[in-house]
Each structure stands twice: as C-alpha cells, then as structure tokens.
Image (cartoon, rainbow, N blue to C red; front, side, top):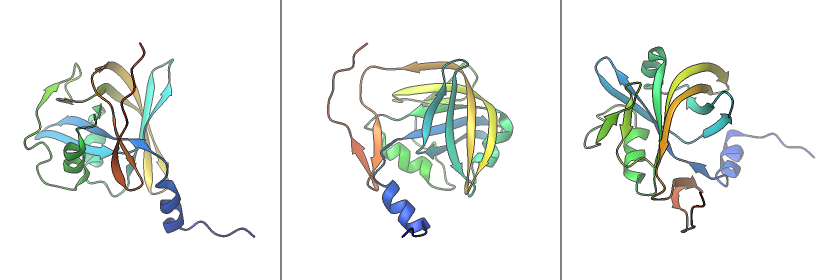
Length: 165
C-alpha cells in the first residue's frame, strides 16, 4: 500500500540527509546582502557550474537576483553563529561579520572554508523553492578546518580526517 508523502513526513525523513552550510552574498546598491542556503552542490566541471536552492519566501534573494553576481561562502565548523545570522529574515546580517570583496565585488566572509565567485546561469522554478545555477569565475579554499554540516535538525561537526591533496 502506497501512502501520500506529506510535507511533515518528507521533512522528517530529509532530516537524515546531511548538507553543507553556505551563505550567498552580494554587493547591493545600499550595502551587502546575504542569505544562508543548505543545499549547495557542484553541478558541472566543464563549464564550472554550481547550484543552490532558495525558498520562494526569501526576502533577500529577490534583491540579489537582479544583480546577476554573488559569492557562495562555504562555512567552516566554527560558522554556526554566522549561519544563524544569515538564516533570519531582515536585520543587519553583516553586523560584526568581517569580509573582503571578491574579484567580482561580492563579499567573501572572513573564515569561509571555501568561496565561489559566480554569475547567474539560470533560475528555475522548483516547487516552493527556486534552483539557481551559477557560472563559477573564481574560487578559493583553505585546507585548514572542516565544513559545518546540518543534519537531524542541528548543526554538526565532522570528526577530524586528514585532507589528501
């Protein structure tokens, strides 16, 4: 017997799927903009494409989208506070957050484990979210630290593991 998948049952089961935590940032006309995303993926090596999902209810994405460029900052295990600050609607998300400009001019958050300087490739409807595909123009990563992970409804830290070049 097949039962209907409800939003509650879907959410309950998806809680078992770990995701990295990233913050999408952009240089808006009135100051920096940013939002947290929990679904950031590598899409293509040639051309280099990444993707992420944004809720249709986001109040920040509609201000970033017309700019056409942004930076995806992958947070390290010490980035829980940063993630929480960028996950809320409104307020001064950049208060107390140090950053520098990427080559395309978007904020690169200090302490980001990795960053991807991007332009919008496409935006596609995806249920109650939109799927943003982005062309990667510049990127950088540090070998110091581990990523912040979200799973089982909480932030998680990975146990130490040597990074192989």
